[in-house]
Image (cartoon, rainbow, N blue to C red; front, side, top):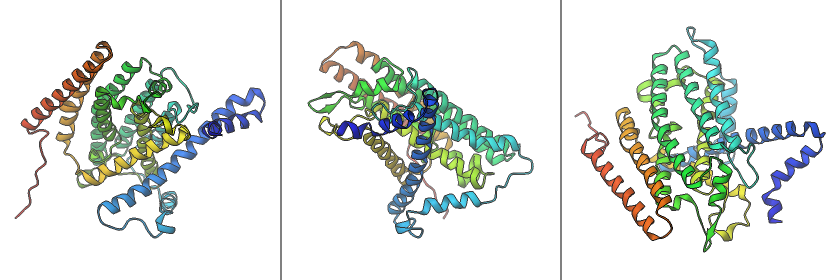
Length: 391
């Protein structure tokens, strides 16, 4: 019974495919996978938006959505209807073709990344030996769509926001890739399925997740920082700094086109959370061996939603960084720490089993953190933020 519940979606897919001729079954399988992705993740997007608005309302001691539907649960539906019927205004001097395709490109490349994510046991839509490489290839295309939006709008604020976004995404994409290389070194494979399987082991009932190793924990922290910046989330949301550049690269977008950017941001946030869970938190594996009776896909989506709660918490806690602080933080702290972590991962592989490698690797990473943080504070480039008020 437990195995049937775990594989219920796989069995349902194969049952539906069996209703068609053998020649059409591969095409039907692809269509079913695409429909599943397009049904589940936009639904999670709507739920995440509602959860964020209510969560920030609680954090900031104000009332969140509470008018549309019981307890405001239908607010995402109202927002969707508003986006659909709102007038689509395009600047007269804009490049209409590029302006039209920019949000479409963003949404398409974000959804493409889900094809290689293992969402449960035997639930990878396109199992690939180089799945991690494919994921980052698709993610890098999002930078193109952002610049397309800013450049085609013929608006200086939009162009400035797009340039900020591209600079930020490139700066933080390097440590994001490097943290993934650390996991590849530990696993010996670019396959996301094999990365999950390598962590799906237990000792005394506890999992062998990479986050529980010194270099895995350091990589996880750097990955979380870089992922927050990659998705333009607060405190790294300078490309959308409304106090400086109106709304950044999508200033000249309205109606459903703006909704596509909004959808793309949140779906990318769900996607990067799924990748983080796959690389560091065992993917669909249970946190305790005794909990393996719970379906694997439940654990995967539970980890994603836990990460979304972390994104919301960060947004409600930290103020927005300045542009110089953001870039210095990437190049003078996150990237050096990630490079040191790569060296530590190599040491971990060659020091052999035992407590010695735990002690040596932990000491190196702790010393690197203290030295890098101290140097950043002393240079006053990464120091505490100061506020001055007019008298």
